Image (cartoon, rainbow, N blue to C red):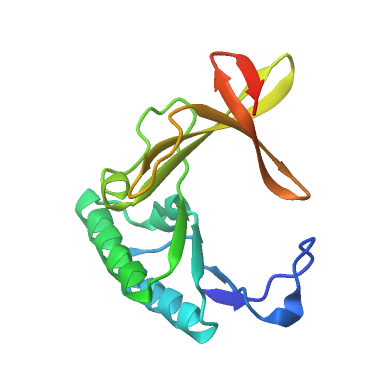
Length: 166
C-alpha cells in the first residue's frame, strides 16, 4: 500500500494537508488487518472527519470466500465506527447484475445510494436513487445528476423518462 497527497485536482489545495490517498487496490486475505490498520493510521494522522473508500469492490478482489468477505466487512465497520468519521464506501455492480452488494454492506450501512447511468438520444444520463438513509428523511424519487468541474450537481427528479427541474 502507498500513501500520497493528491495533486492536480481543480480546487484542491495541497498545502492544507487535509487529504491522503491510500492505494490498497486488492486486499488478499492475509492483508485484511493491515489494510484496516493503515486506514485507521492515516485517518488519525490527519485528523480526518471524512473517509472515502473507493472501491470496496477492488479491495475485495483478493478475498474469494464469502465468509472471509463478511469478516472483512465486520472488521471494517468496527474500524469506521471507532474512527467516528463520516464514511463513503463505493462499490461497483457489474453490468447486467441485479445484486448491489456481497450480502453484508447494505445491512451494516447507514445509507445506500445507487448511482445509475443510461443513454438517451446518444447522451449519457446519470441518475441516483437513495435506497436507504437512516435517521433522516429523503426523497423516494430518482434524482438526475452531473459530475462537472464544480463537483457533483443534482438537477431534479425523474419520473420514467421525463425530467422535472426543482
